[in-house]
Length: 108
Ligand SMILES: [Zn+2]
Image (cartoon, rainbow, N blue to C red):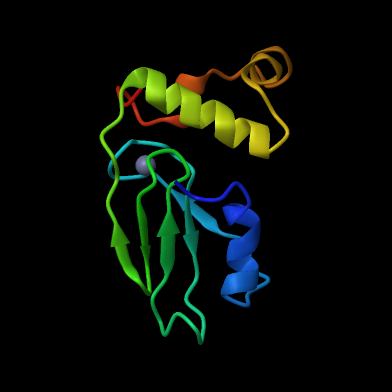
């Protein structure tokens, strides 16, 4: 499990002020897997981190994704929303989006 502040600590850790790009996680289908650009410290390797399934690929190697049920994905999704000061009710009522829209088709 990653510390709750990982999305905020990565820029410090890799001494970058850049924001991550996002790609679909190849393991759990979450569409906002973070992809951080390479830096001098990461020696041309970009860093990939999925806040849902825990997949991470960085200079230390690969942390594989863990298999997850729908309930586990939703729990991790709620935790990710909370870190961004959001919740499912606010997503639905204000932004009119559902959790399924954050995952590739059929992944949730
Ligand atoms: Zn994932």
